[in-house]
Amino acid sequence: MNIAIIGSGYVGLVTGACFAHLGNQVVCVDNQQSKIEKLRSGVMPIYEPGLDVLVKTNVAEGRLSFSSDIEDATRESEVVFICVGTPPKPNGEADLSAFEHVAASMAPAMRDGRYRLIVEKSTVPVRTGEWLTGLFRSHLPESASFDIASNPEFLREGSAIKDFLSTDRVVLGVNSDRAAGVLVKLYAPLNAPILMTDLNSAELIKHASNAFLAMKISFINAVAQVCERTGADISKVAKGVGLDKRIGEEFLKAGVGYGGACFPKDVSAFIAIAAQHGYDFELLKAVENINHQQRHHLADKVFAALGHDLAGKTIGVLGLAFKPNTDDMRGAPSAEIIPMFQELDATVRVYDPVAHETAKAVLDNVHYCQNPYEVAEGADCLVVLTEWAEFNSLNWPYMKTLLKRPLVVDGRNLFDPHKMRTLGFEYYSIGRPKARPSEAVTVTD
Ligand code: UDX
Image (cartoon, rainbow, N blue to C red; front, side, top):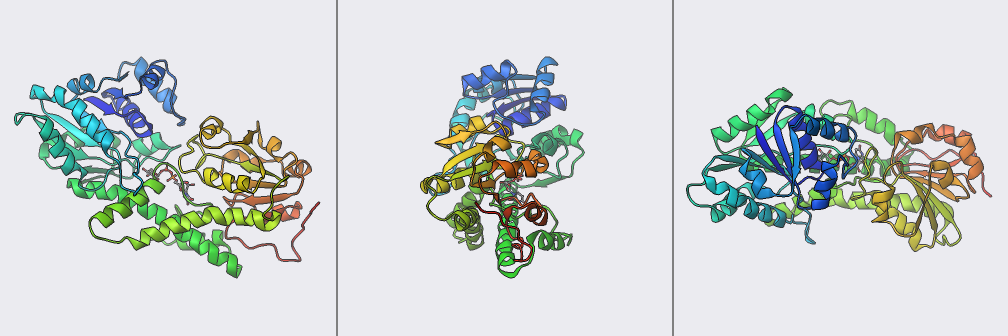
């Protein structure tokens, strides 16, 4: 099929490259000319494992191209996926102005009378499809032939290609057999379960899914608080809870709370959507609050050890991106927690395997280091904020010789508390028992 993808961010690029990989003819469109130039010369504007190879292969084989012309791309395509951003407004509602712009730019090409299927891929509030239909109708003559469909994405950054090609399910919100037929044919090569719904339900599935996952994370973080007060161990509690198939083991890792481009935005958008329709979604407000508290909870562990005057103290931070295998700093816990240290006059040294460039737009006055050992040099405390795999093989005895004080506050529960204490570290993590006095080996300067 001839497909246009409007918006070449994470979702658009991955979707476009994957549809091309499945044998379709795809043009990815973006209004940033510089991004299009980069893509044409094989430079990825984002870090996503495997994406560069997938893009290069499909460009070389003539199935994938890039353009900044929405009208042209629409004219040549039978299916148009809208993948533009829907950022939150100050009140939490989604800002749909990019959608409006796209609709207005597509309209001239749709006057040729050919049928086109326009698919919302971005996360949008329920009833956006109805609104979009009206918007297109207002731009087009009666004779224009089109359907609007909703096909939410469930891609995780860092594993987006795998998530696309081996998805748990494809959700298709459609209002005609013709639209259903086009999308079923398009997704047939994935052999994935397809759930066909009306437009409103498909739109709601996306917000409900992300809100539920965020709720699981806040739930386990709340349980971690109870663990800390009772001596229970959150990793064991989560295991025991997650083994119940009705609950499932995933998204039960306690830590510094969720971040990223989706969960924070989607939870607050869902609260706003519910309010607009007369429902006070108190449960999700609690999810947000708990997530916010987790950032402070980690910082409080540092303050408990170092005090509230951090002038002359150095804090080393391992991991900046909101999660491993991405350079994305959107909603990253590091962007909230590091300023808490800086406000108390701490010097902050940081290391992330890939996120230094993106972090520079978000963090001021931090010292970027080449590796974790450089971060540790002379630091009074080491804080772990992202669970990058390479942190699992750190040489801790060597680390200890570099640190001024062997104090580690682990926001991702990466290390074995007993081993860390045996090595002579003051080690604090989330929801796991503190060392019993007899077990603790605390070294202070
Ligand atoms: C998420 C959804 O998973 C995806 O389906 C959706 O379409 C986009 O949003 P993503 O933001 O890439 O994907 O990241 P994800 O892997 O879901 O993690 C989100 C956040 O939750 C991260 O900050 C992560 O550190 C945190 N998290 C995740 C936890 O704190 N604990 C967990 O157990 C799982």
